[in-house]
Image (cartoon, rainbow, N blue to C red):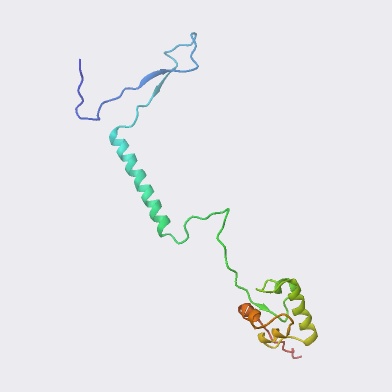
Length: 153
């Protein structure tokens, strides 16, 4: 006898008993039967696909229009740090961070500062041997002078 479905995809799928792998001849098949669920119907499959596509579209729009996107913790983006040094009080370790200035040149800046007194302007740093106009132009955005005011008592 042939059973025709009312409409395509609406065939009722019975749960089929399966034998457990731990069954032995001494165990009862009736007490230890397992069942499996049949695969989802075509209507359920379409709903799953629609939800998945909606989620992927939302994720792609969020990544496209978000400001920062995903963060790579292993390789974070490089950041530029802006700093401004007072050349009259900065130690050698800070002066050597300036462009074109190494540890030896930082020592010369400190030596000149100690011998001639504090720099009155940024341009006075050209009195240091080895610092010319080109080096000054590279350093200018990062240096400043703070004049020393005697404290009144």
